[in-house]
Image (tube, rainbow, N blue to C red):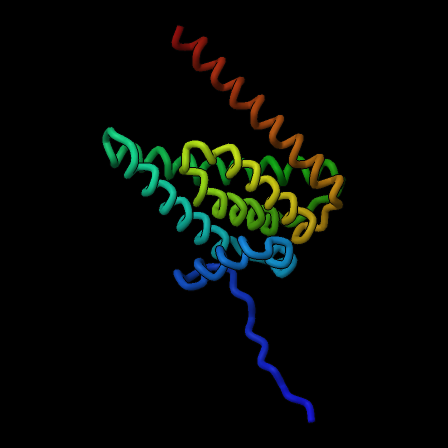
Length: 182
């Protein structure tokens, strides 16, 4: 006698319950999580997850610092969301250049949004910031391979070049600001 099991669709975080479930699945088994991402994933679920994790991170960071709470919260929130967006665009651009073929941006955005969101929850701890950033890039690498179809070598090259380009870009912006304000 065969028993029939019910298969529930995997959701990726548009409601508060789904956000919590998404975080749990992402932290427990990142490779499985990214393997299950739909190829035609829309922006809403990853963006909702990223905003929720950014709000939590900004709130926690603001609580532990002195100064204008609204200003600090705004800076932390803008940084979390802005860096995730910059990262997704840079990783996508580099990956497309390495692969030599256009791809849909959705899975790349989803990978960076989920990876950044998960890492934000530990990155507010001062001595853990570097480990949180490393963990984010490990998650991005796993997602690039599992959800975006890159080889491990392509993912590693994409990550290395993305980090290098973003670092050079921010150094350049800093130098420009210093030159303009001198």
